[in-house]
Length: 523
Image (cartoon, rainbow, N blue to C red; front, side, top):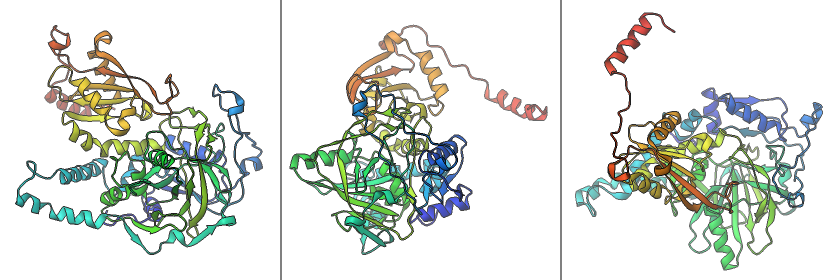
């Protein structure tokens, strides 16, 4: 792709041209019906969906009156809040399942294959490291100048105005219920904003963070802010709490697709998501100064909620919420986000997503991160050949990794290294296999690992941090982790018997049979 996608509208135009978007002109209810459409689209490998006529009450009009249900949470009913939902008519179209296929993510990133984007990350790492030995020669440094010049052109830049501020709503004009927030699952505590890019700044350093965090609508100008323990927004919140000051927040609905992806990616601490997005799309992200908070927001977004979180204010019960684990996350205490202004386009689009029993749309974003961040893992651990997080592991329960094994205990060294890398630290089970195993094929990885492991010898348990969404952990965000060493064992690892060879067909015979198969007309 020659030019970066400047906003979501350009992305939708591209998707429609590629047959990857379906406009739905009939009324669809934001309460449960839209999410059911989105779930069916993912199951069928279907397109992105643009609901042109959100119609609260459509289910009731058709004789269906599903009531909110209390999720079976094993908690006393009094801690489960009443659902917060005040549906009203809205002319704002809703976009869902935007990233619900590998093809659409590739179109968003402007690549024909995700490995191209991974190579782009590899080039960035090479630039950071520099060529040759430490320090390098003058000639090698000169050779970096074109790349350094490119970095200067893709840094986010502030512009005077943008379409995201065509309409400004402040004070009494702020009413979140004017927009078609969805209720995704019957046991959800109410309507949630699920695909907003939430921006904050470190209260001390001013370093920006952008992440995608859900927000339960509590009232016309308040939401809960679901900042999970291990994420950047939560770190800024904790620092603001120590300093006894408010934390300003801007939640962007409808940033350009690459910036949206960057907000979902576990970037190294201190790396600006908009800089990373600019590098991936080869074009700077344009930002505009917010109206009521000291933050910069994407100038070509659809809508921005500006406001603050006060860490001295009492937290509220948020949830339950049908989460990416496939189970309802438990109600818990989270801070309140006060919306001081809504800025938007004159005719905004509303972006939403659902998570739930895998795979869902979030799997394709997570798989993208897997491919793009392989070079970062390999920079730290060159012995890593590949890794894969299958959908049923929900990005926190299981990772397969293949390695070039060269010494006893190598599998455990790699597992420890992965647990030291950002969000990888939350992985519950790591399965390590040899380099000749295709970890992108989980059935092959399991077959080889289970064949190569002795449960008494090759399974190790460790304590460590876990996702706050891990409902099986005995303690909140902390519990047991496991490594399975599925590699061929060295004698020093306690295996002194001969190790069998893997059965493989002769390549020449296999090719001959493939040719004869077609010639014989076999199906």
